[in-house]
Length: 353
Image 1 (cartoon, rainbow, N blue to C red):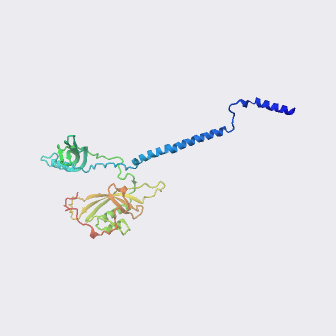
Image 2 (image 1 turned 90 degrees about the vertical axis):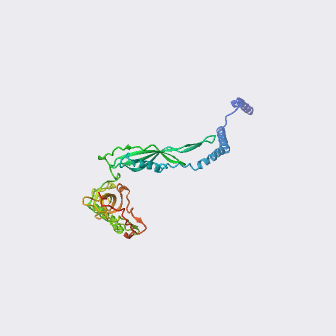
Image 3 (image 1 turned 45 degrees about the vertical axis):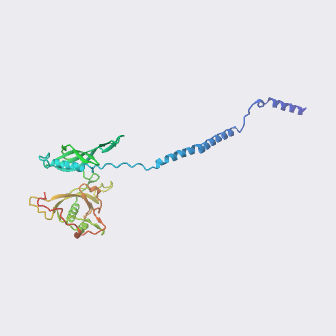
């Protein structure tokens, strides 16, 4: 009796279970299946990219590679404005023009040739019938002239030229005056922009005087001793057959001292402008004449001691670029006997100022 009731109850529960009529039942592995599907899709994309797209990309890179490896085209060198096929013709034209009688600028001289403005390049063209047409080049030459009084003028000369025909001057030179230079004081004008003024101490002036005397002595050994160069493989070339007089020291400057330097600190190296009168042997000056002067920038080492030395020199304004012993001749011995003692020219008595 109890067994029959249990079977009937089980059948009733089975018939009443709502899932019996469902087309699809919930599953515990649904998320796992979806994740697997995504992975399969990603794998397919990777396969397509590797097999199809990657070779295409590689072929594209290979096709452009020669362009990347090609040597870049050389940039054409700029035209050297200090050389021109029309330079000689232009200068001769201006000189002949100045020599005319009457002269367009009496006593005028060519001070410099200052280059050209290229107006046209020479070329030849051939038409379909074989007719050749030649076009000449044109250059406008620029020159500077100076008058006996020192006035400056610009002149221009147009010259046609051809590789086969040469050069031909067109027209006469012109004459354009320069604006006069400002003779008044110029604000903030410094010969050494990166240096600061330094004291002109007596030992510095003494070192400059000693150097000027050695530099005009004609004795390389005396100059090397004045410089204090201990390297036996270096020599120095002095002026010969000259005498220095009235040595003066102008501006003195140095690199800025460190911010933490004491108030009494002095620079170990300074640049000074040294000027002296120069007279050549055989240059007999009259009582009313004084030697012409020359000016140098000198680098003075040990400037904070009682025995400073000039260790380098150059033209006025070169002070910031001076380096110790830069004037030395390396690797050979120069003596007074090996120096050329020929005077610049026959020195007339009126050569001095």
